[in-house]
Image 1 (cartoon, protein in one colour):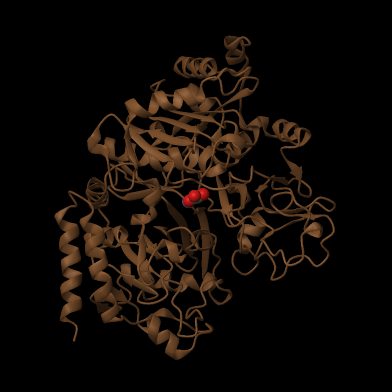
Image 2 (cartoon, protein in one colour; image 1 turned 60 degrees about the vertical axis):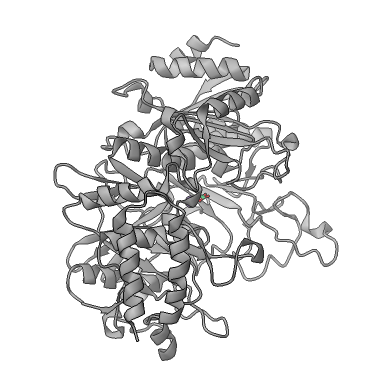
Length: 611
Ligand code: OXD
Ligand code: MN
């Protein structure tokens, strides 16, 4: 091994705890050399990756990469939360004892980086100076250059973030070793991969993938699993898979902030990047803070609830992103943004990129086009209509590239939160929006959030796949204490945020969507803020307050009167059915706070009382 001390000194890495940690893992993995990375190294690393064929140019100042074909998504079955306390076992966290998992991971990683460079990526999952900064520092060790390039886009990266730590050892130790991707038995009974968060030791050990969701350890493993655990253990904050937006009322000068959770494929990124409809654009401006993670806490000074996006970029799903669904996302990956695409279709002659839903039809002239696996489209067998891009293909870009990025996204103190919303993809029953009466009902609603099963194998029609607060894959401690922690943190807020459930996806008998969605989704959110301000009263129902037609201000919205009536009403028999499923779902969780059960009983009784 080359001289580590020299490498640390040259990079200005002074934190002795970090130096010890890097030394330990460099020796264990057998890495040939160590390179300490800062964001300023990006251009050089890009150049190296282009020369090595890990990236290809996708026009000017934009790049394309392909991952190994069995390594294209997060693996929930192989993801584990480990601690030394068996009471940390929950329903969804896949808990295992750390005494079992740590040796296992060390065994997998031993010698696995022989001949490779170990990149040391010091990062911060917060704007610098944030009151939660002490939970935000981490150092990812990775053997893969494209992972480094993604980390530079998704987190604030540089040695300063860890040199100046108040407590030099309070950083998350995040070790990523790719392994021999072609021999890991992905998805077979002999699967060798393990993605482990040793939460009570603030250590993340991920082996067997270089796909972003498994390999960018600042994002999901630290930003969600570890941070949720830290937030609970410290009693100080919540870390949730939430988007966060601002809505500025130009007439009053006031900006509202709304965050919220949506299970996968429920349009969270599109909502987070939404623009105001043209007819409301003179008055309202929507700003983007984040599309995937929010940390929430109470400021002891003013007692208000604050939120921030700990990430520095967007790791978005490319499929179906186009001028109508999300023009903001398209601009955030324009040429010159240094965005990186993964697993979309690529034209090696023209350096163009394409994915399903980018345009209604794929490019007519297929010359030079290769699918995400790298196979020429022109050489496909007749009738082979496999997608050109992988359904989980991604774009990665920094927040500064998002055209409507909030001007204060980098402010350390975060932004005051006015509303918390949940929404799934539900074809019937769920109205356009229903506001909750109080905190307990809000948390209850979050815990019973779900999305419809998408494939027959996944579930029964009409039955949701429950995804509490959209955190099912990221839960790190048991659901009962999780609910109690929510009640505690939000309960401490001097000004309570308003909770609501939204649904853009109700369908008619013939399958058409009843609500136009996209930019029009601003209207129900404006209604929610007016309700919160006492400017409207809505109509009370057993499952929450819903807007009247007049309160929604629908001039110019293309919607049939009967469709509008459906999305602004409650189907009581369907709701009664749903309550039985909810009961079963909640019964899985030991120690659920009595307030949650009381909210459940209240809603059930109100539904029973309806004619
Ligand atoms: C996810 C992601 O997997 O944000 O949820 O990438
Ligand atoms: Mn996500």
